[in-house]
Each structure stands twice: as structure tokens, then as C-alpha cells.
Image (cartoon, rainbow, N blue to C red; front, side):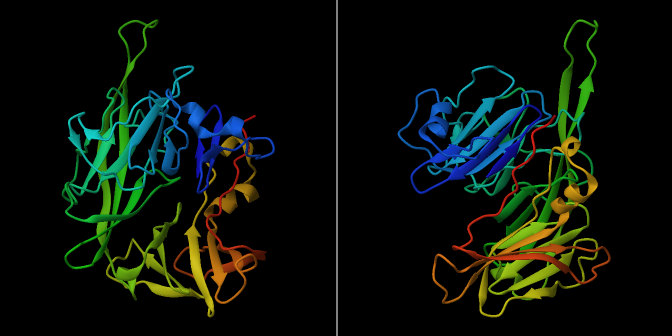
Length: 341
């Protein structure tokens, strides 16, 4: 799990025993960088399902969801802050189970957006933590109305995009149909009366896009990836990868990759958030589709392959750039971001 903010980085390695915030110099794992030390009352172990840092919102919030489906946050603008107590109650009152996803705004440097967006699986609704609140609340929206909240559907996937909106994939429990949702986390800065005073952020949300995903076997897909420049959604089923054009939602997804004798285990984009530290050819990597597969029947310590693809505009064929093999079973593929100079 990779997180990034303006001041430092958090690259989390989640094992079957604990979670570690990797050393940013040599990526080593040790007792000293166990995540348990970031808790006010340190548990014996902590295993994280989801983690995200909202780097531009007022409190620079770091939110996690642990293996017990509890939500914790740290206001990183407060020196010495710890994960203190679980926040898994709507408005501090109604308990709920969160889906294992957290979305943040990576895009607008000046947006005082709501720090994080999550999903209440029990009540099937988008929720948020406001800049000036502690507990999550049901998400509301301004502007055009594209979908209802509660949605009545189950969360399958959520990711923050480099281009701004938080994208989600939900599935209807009664029909099995699959839908995409996109949400903008917005904000307006209010100037103070006097120059020496601190201003305030008024946060609000907008529904950016919504529609049904149609294509071969899409209702059985569990892996999805939204492109961070073009309006494309990719999904994988078995040994195949499909591409769906969000800008032409009446056209079914098309098969774009096939790996006979292999099983797709990872499908993702890994956009760089820290733009200042990179040149153009490095930034381009953030828009390459990453596909990790396991070769069926191969030894567990030598079955993994990772491929990188260029994604052209206008739904043109994908171009394979690199391929690596000889890995164990693929679990995740992430880039370590370069520290801001």
C-alpha cells in the first residue's frame, strides 16, 4: 500500500503477521518501523486493509482501515499525533462495516476538499470525513444529480485518480449488474477578515460520472483499473483483460489482452503523485497499465510475471513495453515515489 503527502511518504508492507512502514532509504522492514508504534495504545499487531493520505485538505489526514474493519485517522499536521480510537460509527453513533477502500483528492493543490471518502457496506452508501469532523457521515452532493446515495449496491473497487475524481465500481446485489461512479471532492477557501488570521475551507462534493459497465463477463470481474488520463476502465476475468470506454458507455467493453495458461492477479495503474521530482519519461510510467499474472501449474516461487503496457488514446491497441518473470505468486505491484527535493 503506497501513500504520499507533501512532507513525507508512507509505503506500507502488510504481511500475515503485521504491517510495516518501510524505511524510505533502503525499504527495510524491522520492529522499529512496525505500524503498531503509530497507535496511542500499541496493539500487539495491526494488519491494514486500506490506507490513504489526503495531502491537500486542511488536516492532512491519514486514514486506515484495519483487519477488524475499524477506521483510524491521524491529523498529520499535528506533531506527534497517533491513531487513537476507532471511528467506525456514523456521526459517532451508528456502527457500520466499511468496504476496504479509501479515496482522497490527489489533484487540486488548492482544494480544501473533504479529506477522505469511504463506503458503508452495511447501509450501502458513500460516506466522508469532513475537514472539521472526527467521525464519518453520510456523503451529500451539490450540483447535478446522477445517482442516489444510499446506492443500494455493493462496493467492488475504489481508487483515487491523478486527474481528480475518486472512481468506484459497484455491483447490484439483486441483478449482479456492474456500475461505475465518479465523485469530485471540492472545496472553497474563505479568506479571513485580517491578514494574520488563518482562513477556512468550505468543502463540498460533486457527482462527476455514473453509468452501467457492459461487456463480456463483467459481472464476474473482481479486478478493475481506471486510467488516470483517458476515460477508460479496465477489468480482468481469468486470463483476459477488457477495456471499457467510459465516454461511450453504450458500447460494450472489448478484450485487449489474453494470457493463455495464466491467471491475472494484479491489474492497476500506479500514477506518481509527486510531480516535481520527475522528468517526462518517468511520469509517463504512471499512465502504463500494469498486469501481474501467475502461470498455472508453475512452482509457487517461480510462477509470477509482470507486464507493462502503453495505453494509447482513441481505444487503439495496447502496446507491451516490458515483461518480467521469475517472481513468486504476484500479490501487488507499486512504485516507490521519489522524495520531494
